[in-house]
Length: 411
Image 1 (cartoon, rainbow, N blue to C red):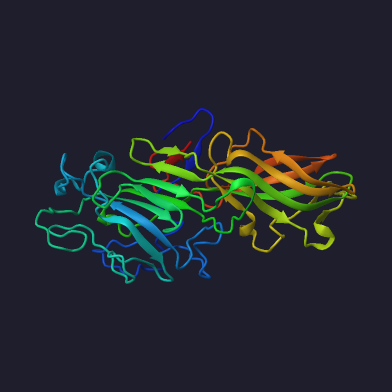
Image 2: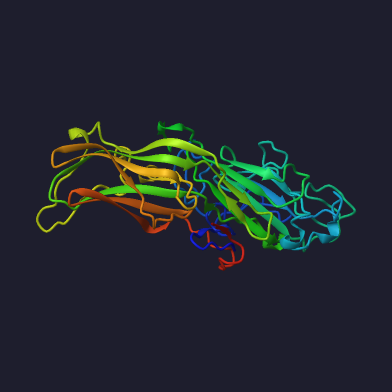
């Protein structure tokens, strides 16, 4: 694990049941033990065809969505690009510098109603690869150099979604050796603080890893862990006067990319200099009766009147759409000059562009949901960030219950 004196971000990667996991009731499309299968989701969300583009916090992968996989097993002989089939059983830490993604390279795997399917040749049929076995490779082609392979150790790295946000920077090709380096890129663009940003196409980006697996472990089972942080908002009126919220926006210069490098002994996690600028509209009440959301002064025994939590673009019904997903970053969190901009009327006085900055103690983490509480106390707003319920829309615990031995730690 990587330690940092001031900030520790944890993204748990391993195996278990977030996105593609085995169920006692459901079998893979192929149940022949010779095939490398990806187990079906324990929970599968139906999809309207927009599952990979709509900004939704997921607790299971939608039917029809797809994830990418890199798979490693046999290293090269030192100083060559000749497969060393006698060392396929070596553990990952000993062979990763010499190992190419000989099993899978950017393999597309599709989540179906009854199982995960994929075509090893890049087509649309369900045509899986094979585990290595004596005298045969992963395409089931005869190869007399391959010894008894029952104890071969396989290593799998997965990313979701398959298209649109992740790039595999290394290895550069299927024949190149070395552990993966990924870059995640946000879909938004903007070079001005006045640019109107939309979070509708932000994917719930996820990663997973499975180390040192053998054929006897059966179908490949991933736990996908969330790369981004989810941020929602609520408004509370603790004052003695009526409050109307006309709009809430989140503006600033936001992190555009995350680089995840798994080539070293520890995971190297960094933020390139790329940024996008603009404003997200969190809530717009201008079309509402009265021109906004009315929060009257609390009366009687009540001490507060509150909006829904989280408040939406127009208080719509889909609560998932009311969270904005962002790159957490380090230090300044989410980027530079990130601020909340509120247009409101208090005690009959309109205040069009009140700016609030985050508390310096707020250090968001990937995979967690937060609520920014906009509390009107006395005659001013106070912003407070709190973890939403248990804070995680999926934990991503390690496969063996030990979160300290095979997890990626972000700092």
